[in-house]
Length: 201
Ligand code: ZN
Image (cartoon, rainbow, N blue to C red; front, top):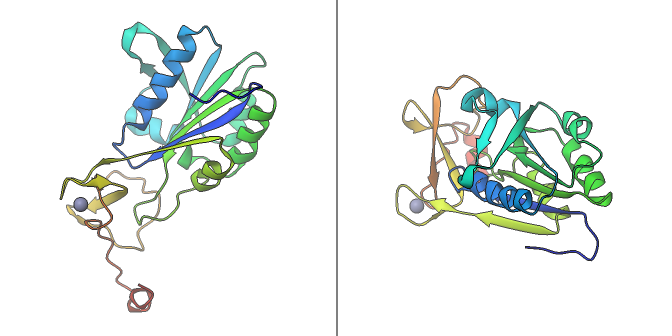
């Protein structure tokens, strides 16, 4: 683990879906709890709607309640003055304000652990994650296993009714008809129906 000479830094756990980002985040929080640090966990409400979980169980019986949030401002307002470790799950769904919030928390001595999906279904940088990866002291990019070839997966393959979703489908889909697979660069498919866009490839 990173140890600064003074408390306060940012760690990012990035990667595709199914890359065990949350497990890694839980592992770090569990260690902090065992070390008797005051910990708070936040989670994008957008994700909570699907997962239906407000408690995140950790191995060994230690649980830290994940507080659902819709915005970076809610994270800023929700952090108690004596909190030493702040963890946020699904950070890609939060607004860009999370960059300033994470920076301010780290500057005042808080260890900030941010977990999120770094690329959208097209394979492009997702939300504030890329900026957070730049300002963080520590970045871990985790991989899943490509379901097609077994290689390291770095892309989220969105499927709609079993077929690859087109380039122009929305970055964040709300409705639940889609599903996702972890895939590598070479097996990732994003059809571009627009001929002009295809020319850019
Ligand atoms: Zn593959």
